[in-house]
Length: 449
Image (cartoon, rainbow, N blue to C red; front, side):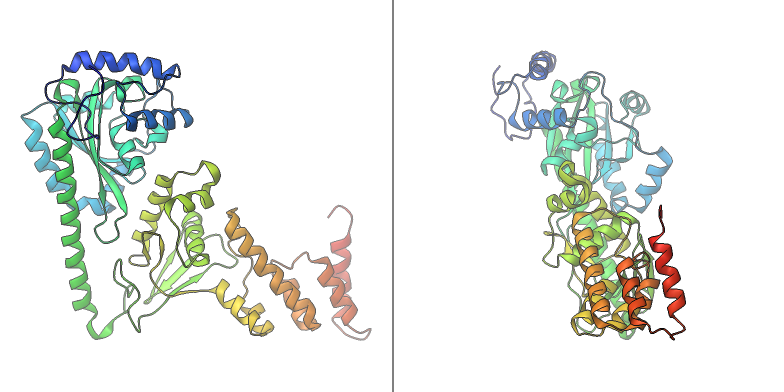
């Protein structure tokens, strides 16, 4: 059959193709691909590239199946909190449209490929469960190999995957069409919509249906956002900023609005305050917020993934974390690139500014401890060392016993032998603080400490 002329390079099959015959040819190409063959005429470039990524991710091509990354109940709870939840009527309408055309299911995954919602005929749902096509399963490409949902997320465009184009053999009896859904305000991918069924249901129009439904969902998201913005403006009125975050989603900080205030020092989880509301972030979200504070020009998903996870970081994972963080801090972060949309004020920045102004005592009083002491994110570690070293050097250079004592009481200076020696040297023989300083130095110098 050779490479077919299709209406779209993302469509897997045309209406005149013999499905079973083409599935057999793809199965043989799949076997050759696993043996190392490349540039096969039956294999589209988008699939060949996905197979390569799946192999690098060490997905099992023979017995591999999408893992269950959370319980169905947990996935249902996440669905209830998802912005995509407003699209359920559209999903059911799509299901009704395709119900008479074949045995298929409609499903939605979030930005990291975790399935949050699925519906269809009971018999088809039972077949789907056999390959973990169910709530709580992880269909990202690095978890499940080439599949319409995960590969559409990885590639950033709609895609149809037919039979043995799937990387994992257990999914070869399925055909799937998927389209990413983006936040209309920021352009950020927040999930993916998919239509899946047995091979006989494969049709090029399936992808067009899914794409149209995805655009309808985006329009619904835009409408809902506009309604929320209008309600927020009406509710706040003259009391703008009271009772919630005072900025609008996807927009820069309005003139006169309160700044985002964050405490990073001496804690693993950042504390964010604005408009009378406070939010305590998880360690991972604290790292992301700190990175964006350190890089006001912004970061793309690729750089964020590299900073957070190293060379094996996946942009789709970073996007998923950003999506959750943006729900926790509505309107505080915009995309393309990801950056703070509000004036950043945090205790790290304040200590640096006080040091720069020579106000060492105030800087030391404001310094609650190391910057996010738990994480090992290189850029955060560098900022942590820079702040610690700068404050320590300023304290020692001051020659003021009271400042050195305060430094030694701080978690960062608790075991600072050089600072303790400096304090002992500065305190005169009759100073009542000297015996305690000497005792502390002896403890620090004790063998085996």
